[in-house]
Length: 109
Image (cartoon, rainbow, N blue to C red; front, side, top):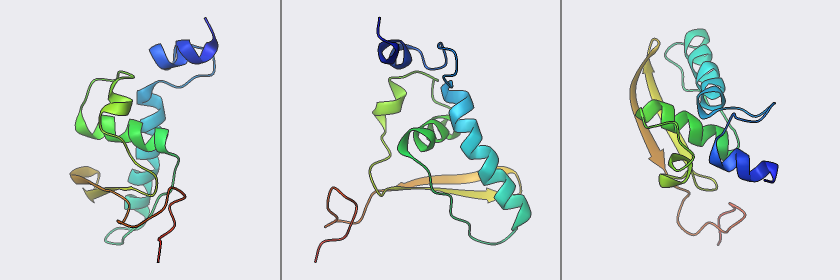
């Protein structure tokens, strides 16, 4: 089988490939570090869709399966907002891209 097929069937099964837990965990590690280093402040983390998607799966407590990567998708220019109280996640909220944005993520006049 081609490597991408194996990757899509079971993330983390290939050498050098990351599981959903590892991929999302990297994002959440940064989020928690920012919260510790900047308590009471608003921080912004920017990432590609797959790491954000994996983090969302972990935050929701969903199964770590490839099907979950497409069930609730982080769209282009969408935001996954995470509110913390110390190291405890208080809330998560997905905010889609503003209406009227193009496929490139830019707002249209």
